[in-house]
Length: 385
Ligand code: PLP
Image (cartoon, rainbow, N blue to C red; front, side):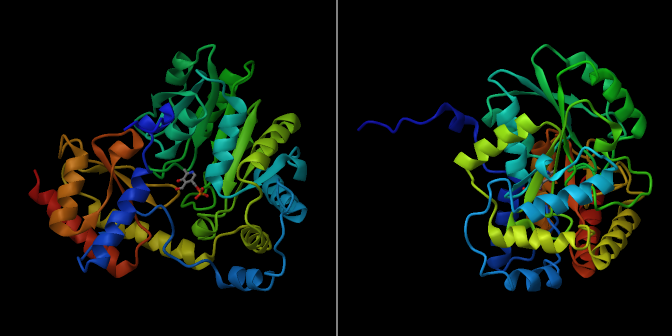
């Protein structure tokens, strides 16, 4: 019997580790096991009611839209982003609406990368960046962030080669919740100013902040930039699949739109409508959501502070703590597995973020579950060293 011939790219393809783990934990719960799921990459809240109500009144709109998105939506995203970042160049023509931030990233890499080109990814980093780059034929060059999870510009400079096409930035970051300093961003902009290297700035968490001193990457004035964002995290719209790219170059966005026109097509109409509704509010996250996150972040700090041998960065944004387990275990994947088995608490091992020795904890869970999970986690840590 002859075997099916497959594409080489499948040999290194796997499902996103966080999605797989999240599915496993849900399956365990469905089997009646007690689980405390701290692996999610999304808010626990429902999509705000006003967004759902608006969309249900627009279901008569159901044909293809322009590939780059409904003109009113492109225009409102441009207005919001122009004022949020203070960047005059952002016009509706610079906005490409996509089915979530992931396709916006994918099409950016497809439009910028030739086989063998290099993309610098500061690590720890979100699970999908490497795969997205590899799918486009690029090579990932991982450069560690410094101890405070800030950009190490000297290390980035040392890794730039004639093949470097893109530097991927993400602030606030997944998985650490850290933000880059303004000083490091200015240094990086200086380094890149006479190059053709594009900064792709993944700003998906930029509306979930716990600090007043955040400097958004696009405000720095990078010579070539694509801003990636969306409504998944700010409005609990993960399942709706709606995001966008803001591109500083019209021929480039034309090429990206061309790729989308032959592949994914326009983002689903109800999802575009949901984004329009969110923009009536400037895509500001609901106050209750932010308040809940602040309370839960404080709870994690209170419970985990002072545990011997456990280190972590206090997140300035997003909804994650990244726990440094290196003084506790040599194998964080195995450690997370045992934690789940023994206590029902699920964390994502750092291996998923190119950072073995760490684990990511999401703090979106309701207060009672979070408290119980944290006390189990604490007891487990205290018993494992
Ligand atoms: N970028 C980062 C850093 C993320 O954490 C995620 C989702 O977890 C995404 C992009 C993807 O967003 P979306 O669900 O809108 O595709």
